[in-house]
Length: 128
Image (cartoon, rainbow, N blue to C red):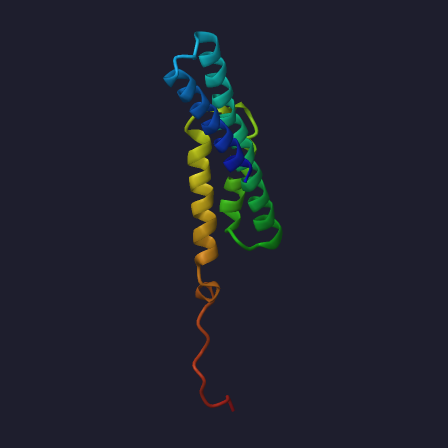
């Protein structure tokens, strides 16, 4: 929700700039301001939302030993923490991280929990 809110805000600002440009009311200073605010919402603020999701998922996975394998939970935790740093300001990084983390969580949740257990012996006569 945090990432969605930031993205919606960024696109709303882009729309306002486009409407003003269409009316011929967009000067250079306003265009630059709208661009900068939109960039910050679309990258930095969205990265924080994605980071919160990643860190929360990783902590649950590490504490409950569920949702994700341990190695993937550690990787998800590192991705989440990195999104709180200036690395989260890059344009493609937050979206790519979100796709990877969401895909990993989705696949893990869809797995059959009984498929990892070894099959039990077929029923037969009791040992003597």
